[in-house]
Image 1 (cartoon, rainbow, N blue to C red):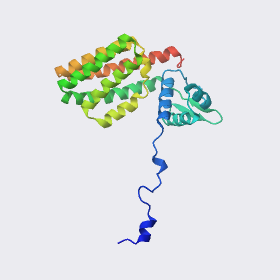
Image 2: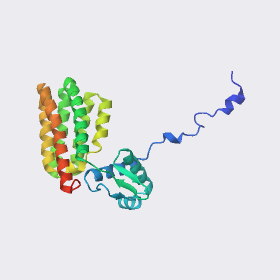
Image 3: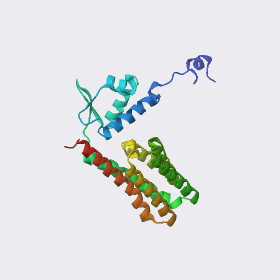
Image 4: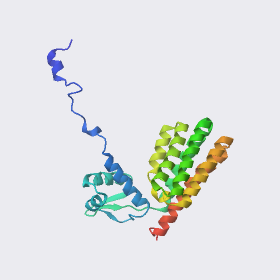
Amino acid sequence: MRSSATSSARPSVSEAKPDKTFRRRPQLSEEVATHLRGQVMTAALRPGDHVRLDETAQRLGVSVTPVREALLTLRGEGMVNLVPRRGYVVAELSRLDVEDLFWLQGEIAVKLALRTADVITEDQLGELDWCNRRLRSALDSGDVTGVQDAEFDFHRVHNHVADGRKLAWFLLAATRYTPARLYATDPEWGDVAVDSHAQLIDAYRAGDRDGVVEQTRRQFIDGATRLTRHLEAAGIWE
């Protein structure tokens, strides 16, 4: 039996102080990071541009703290550099960077799609079809947020069928660098996405694994081409 002195010296779980190293980062800083990431990937912030804390915070209507935390995140991702006496500066973004991002996404997506092909049911195909009809409706009505939500839901449902949680997580992490709003405001991209989804569903129904791979790669090839064309027009590689 432990003595009362020993027991009283050890705090209970409820009395123990929380370990601050395990506090979750505020969601606001994540939202700021997402916004800035999109700005960099669409050349709204160009290589060499300064990202000033006060100006960014004022523009986004937040305090300086989440902006600073977001920039630390982006620095770790290689999207900005911290330059002595100059602050945060947007890093270079090459054609190869864009190619590599979409190659990685495509490879993971194909792996998930082939797993999906082995197990997907008619009910799940119906759910994918419903998501695709939602996407078509949002595109037709010009609902940009609805387009983004429907596209996300399609791939969320799809990747859930594959039951590859780690692969799906890596894919989600990689797609953080694709500017969703840029695509959601592009009607031509929308037409390709809806058609590709429809053909992917048909390939699953037919047991056509080659068709599954083709339609999965199609969207990532199209996405890379559109983003490269956008950045070329912005002149960041002149």
